[in-house]
Image (tube, rainbow, N blue to C red; front, side, top):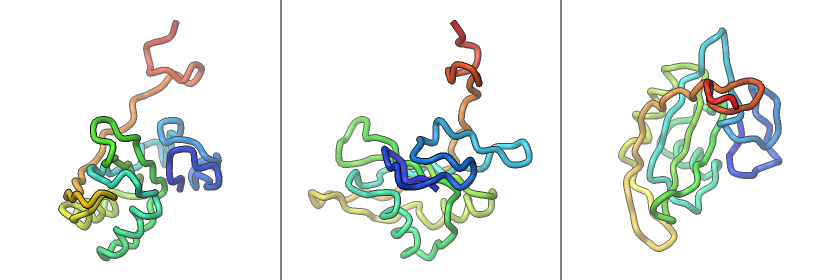
Length: 136
């Protein structure tokens, strides 16, 4: 799995690429996309390993195929994450375990993790890498 933003040391287990972002990795197994979980309100100072360690502390020890931290958009203290799993059952178990877990940011503020199934990635043109239908 890849922990996300700029981490060049980890290798994607599905495609074998090193240090790439999930948006560039379209992992397919038996011609369908693997289920992904969108987790919101992750403290911005957390790494992918911190998130996985927190899930482990909640009793969830299924390693995801891929982990990607998304950059903060509105509040700089909070980010979101996408975790991709081998099957729907593991994704649903991750949602059940992580939803509602209280987390603290570096300034002492707290929120509760949100979790839901993520929308599948949009199809991309294999030549340009742009969303399908946007070829110039």
